[in-house]
Length: 588
Image (cartoon, rainbow, N blue to C red; front, side, top):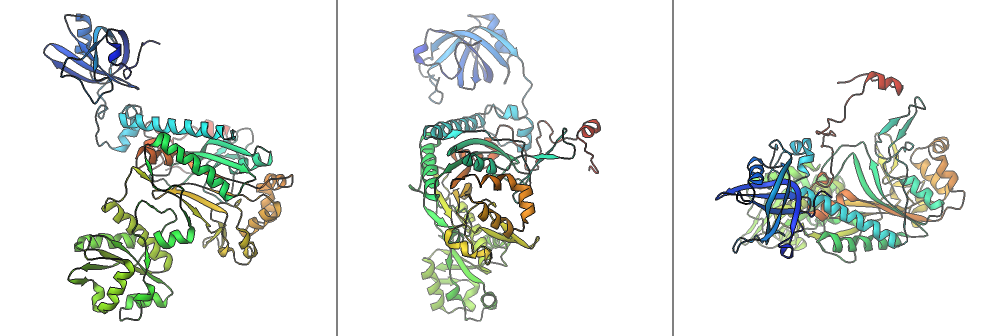
């Protein structure tokens, strides 16, 4: 190595040692004829002292150096003078007295600060991502991701799982998210698809008798982006033979629990993870990925809110809707502006509006006081377990709309009231998810998760007659309001798989064209099997206490699906298009 030690490893026991350091100028200060440079590398920072009486040549280099210059320094480790120890640095008890120095490469002034926290436009950060990655927070994020992935690999290897890579260039899979396709030069007019997940391959590995498989898999989805979603992402992919749901939950829970203890530095709120059915989660929290770090659960007021002169509620009840509410503790004093903000959130989630009911020591303040007797209002506060000073937020609408609107209001109040502790991880299992959902645009049923998911045995009689009633052997791992991953017990018999294909509108001929390889494999002794996929980007985002998966990815795309640093995506030449037998019909 060109350096004898790293900038973060020098300690008091190294005093007297001659070292060679190489790194970047983090800070430069001039005091009393001396120059101090904080030299930085991936492992930390060491203070280097330049004294003209020791080396005028080294002093000249220090005078030239500016932030982000790359320097080589040789010097002697010395104890810092009394009163000059820096307790905020691991190397804060020592410094290096420079005997010689060399500028290995100068640097332009960076477009944003590297050596201090700052609010920086994300586009600018991504345009100069190689500089952004030098920042302490980003380096820490990458280290957390590395440690998490390393732990996962070792954990599953130690528990009898075999890591197997599956193809990136594969066959289009209808029925899931939109896929990226890759034209084949060798087979003109034909295309590969980039995998949304290794779903079929991991099932085929179970047919092959691998029994316990895992992979840190790269996956691709051509979908609209947001803070916790990307065009390309990484997932822990797991599949096991001869298991039921309990087995998958047990293995996954054990790995995640130990991962948080070893890598995360976070506190687990629940051990073991609680389990919620899909219907229960929607009823209590208004979402299928509830944040369980706080309460504020949704309550049903339908039986208490009817039979009055309030037309809004009556119209909802006559239409088969529901009246639901949450309590915002200590928010009875909210202003009209604040109430309007909450109303806009409810409307944004699809509701027609929101009715506030403030509970005070003097009585009730609400539009409802014109229509509801005080006794009825007291019954509502008792149902809601509300106390003087609390604000009840009421939504009347179709059951799913009311739940969704209150789910958004619940999250908003959780943020406003500081109930979302980023140092706490509240994992849970979501179970008994509907197997199918109606697609009004296509006028047919579609798989809610994917078409390879098995269904609960007790719901099999309704498969063809009432698909909307059928629940899947599907489960999601949720944490802090995010879906971290999902999985299921898979279909392993050809006859059942063909029935599911028919329900989602696929003819037998189409099924054989698209999935004949899988159907045929099911005829060669396929074991019962199931698994799960956990998003590495989202998981490490939570471990690092970040709000976006882009903070955990070295070179991510923006929300507009571009990469500012390289300019991707870009057009390709007419010559290259011709080689691929492609033509662009329009380009704006």
